Length: 173
Picture (cartoon, rainbow, N blue to C red):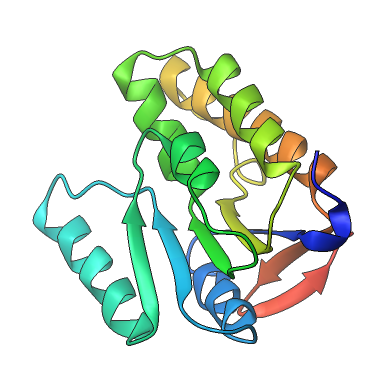
């Protein structure tokens, strides 16, 4: 296991449009470029293609994008040491695994294990989905519960946890 002094994991969680991604990008750019952005989104429709394009254009030059809608662990393991990395976002990654019919608990354990050994400044983004009403269908409840468990696992191994509210970071850990 690498010495924790070599890397630091910051977990950034919050609601939709709370400023999570932009804040993670700002934190990452405090380090030397190139900055690595591991994207988990898949463009199934025009609206999602527009969202992805907006994110890419906001990042600009100096960023290297790695698409990892399912094999996030493999993408993380292939990272160079000491590079600032943004991983965005865990809830999209979780959705991809649920829709693919994969063993979500096993994938989440694998992910939290690899995240427990950061080899650089890593900034991991996830949605907080448990603050609203109880969903009215079984799939949505399974997703909410799995996302809550995943967020807890990642927060437990993170050096720092930030909660984004209305564009403002609140230090949780």
